[in-house]
Image (cartoon, rainbow, N blue to C red; front, side, top):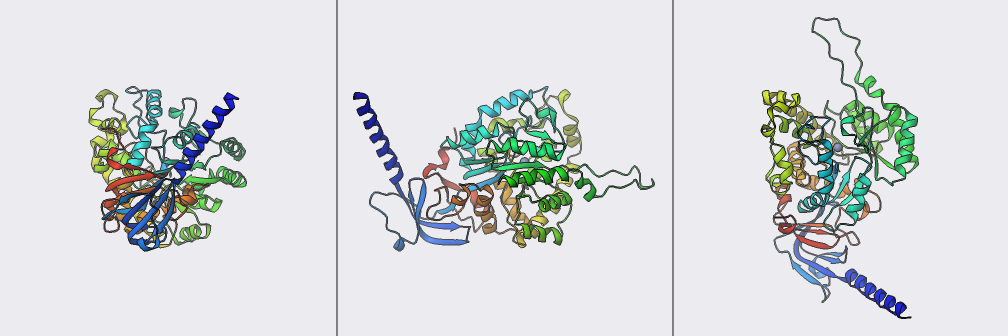
Length: 488
Ligand SMILES: [Zn+2]
């Protein structure tokens, strides 16, 4: 009897707490409210938050603020949906040791130590995303451990919402990254591909990820030599296509979406023809043609440009890293310290870094060439109304978790996108890419949506650089003063 009563009291207490949490009301008043989903701007607007969601939004006359509401005065402030980065990797720290398959520094720091560091700093990384106004991210590929990351994020308040893919399905292996739970898995036959999708499906992935790596074109030995039998781009892309076909068919049969890494035009075309839902990078080898643009329009494929990552490997290795003030301030200082390659022991310097250090101009030239193509392609696709979802590929060497998004915005601006287009790419369009049950409830300011918001001190429509002038971040209805989100 006693036990029952105690249980009953506990239940009542729990119930009243839940009810209280549900009915906590916060009114943001006198703000400029920007909703990139429909390009609407409300001046002197009111936004009412009830518990974890937006209850109402509009002009002061249209919204009755209940007496019990806590009021946050937002005169001179700008409110946006929380930002979404649609391309990150939590299994990588962005430090110099995080991709031993690119530069092997395992004699300086064993890869297992790197992975242990990453696993023990997950909540630190989460907080850095929130500090950057990023309230949701998509991890587009990593070890099976990624599913654990999603679970941890879901039970951590100061963390973005996380959608995940499992290991990357690829034509190439990366044994340097295999400590028993490899992030990249070599798949050789269509049947192996289907089997792997079935295995992943048990974990309810948000995406199946394909790493569509095309073998490099053959190099002719000298200008005078008779032309070697040349394999065309289409033929090279065709080599892995049967696996791509099988993986997408098996995924779609299970209502799973497929994200594809394809940076060459012919691989990207093949991926879209096969039904890819999301291309996770820009095409960088040549300008996209009309047929490709039409194909993307017909299929409704979304593209994430990840411009920032294209400069960061090269710039890090050539000791030309251009971290932004946001990255320096909000990135993990331990990670950033490792990116100074001049501090590496000379006898352990990998050839790739040595070569870059000897000729930094060549590295910068290659980056420029990549941007000449990638930025133009982004403008072409944006003008053709292809859904563009902002994303950074954070976690790769030099691409800093969280604030790398603001360098991505700069590059999108250089490509010719307007502030509203950039803001839409990181809110409404990114939310569609996020998908699942959560996608339809984030990325737009509308009653019923989750209260994931960024409050800025200055107008991002006047200059997209103001997107990082963050005053407050609200995630799931809980507001955090930006200045206090990170350890000092
Ligand atoms: Zn990636």
